[in-house]
Length: 600
Image (cartoon, rainbow, N blue to C red):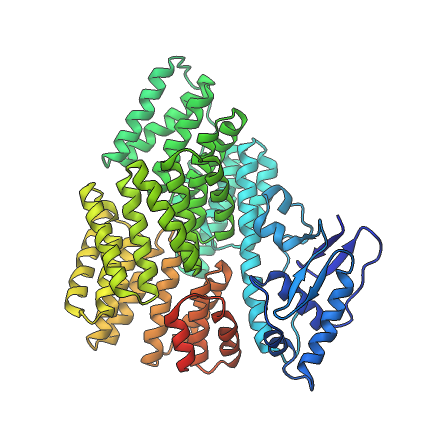
């Protein structure tokens, strides 16, 4: 190992060959951190404008800092060119890279885990850099919390409750308003037999939510309090009978009797454990986890616990197909929670393990494409969705293809390609109806309604959105209610009723966030509409909405939503936001937003 670069906490560089070169300028550290975290090489002009605009000779000041960095990476590394390319010496470790993209075991070993990125690293007269740094700090803090949460789940699956409690407590401390963190900690205390600690944690969560948010704990926290250390389980050696219980539970969930089905599946997990049959232990957990994640709102956390257990058992027994299944579902939950780096980690592994199974490959590719789409990486998303559609067709999976087409339609809608969006969304609806998959219909219908609004077909769009909303309410799906309520609010604004529009957008956010497991991108999408309409009507809360969107988008790494939030901020007269927006726009493939920047 040649270098270890610590960006978490007070920045420093450790070298195995002796005392490393120490930067003489804070701006050199700022430049080094920016280069290490940049997605693509920036130009010298960009770097000079970002950090050295106030200098008499910005490019000369940049050359001085580049020379400092060159001394640090001297053996086996380089930094040169225009755009500037940084090459690190072989075997260099960057702590942020480990936390964001590494395994949880490697990440929790990083001494700065949980500390602020580049602590004290702000620089004078560099508002654009400070804006970038704040966004990067939010994202790295979210990545640290996500890795601690993941470490707690994985450690719990190994039966190490003391270690899991330590990780879960740190995650809850970093994100105290996330009910999933409290639920995990409560479940761990219960499984460890410490009921007093579980009750104390429940009281802490309840008091904090009531005091700070005027809210009460949701189903995920209450379910964790019901967790018990199971006593002696009646032994059922008849594997076929246990398997039949799993089948019956799955059938009940599919038929709509979700509570009864989940109760049956929980019992099946206990019986499978008592039987000692690895394949049955894995299968019962996977079926229960899918029911919890896809059929019951707000219980993804319990589903994640079962997925990590299934992954551990399957991996130990060489069952790669089940490992791929578990990791795809873990990645899906991380996708919903906007933990995109962790989602890519799990889904990438699932894709490698799923080779040879068109259905499994289609699933992993669909979720990977959805991650890229949420992040605003549309070129990659389109390629992955196309590949996913091909595999879904090979597998004869109409539902997977319908979902892929709905997400492709969303990409086209966001990029302003309305004719393409209409074609994709209408095809999604046709496939869903052909397979009697009524539960998905409000999603493509709401997106198609919005597409028609943008095409100037207000009446048609409004009718489609009302239909989507009615179906979503019947299903009780918070996400589908939120996306259709957002569109209905936009209709109100088009019709000259801004008051109704603001009420509708507030209602849309409340609907999509009413459970502990919302689709986070959708929350940002609704916020963006609040900011847009709020600016046009000079709403008194618009600055707060912009700040909220900036925090959410930066913390999760949603590039398009980050750019939209910066454009809203720039429209409010924030000069630093305008500078940061110009830098970010170069990384985004959306002609609508680039055209907006040119006009402004």
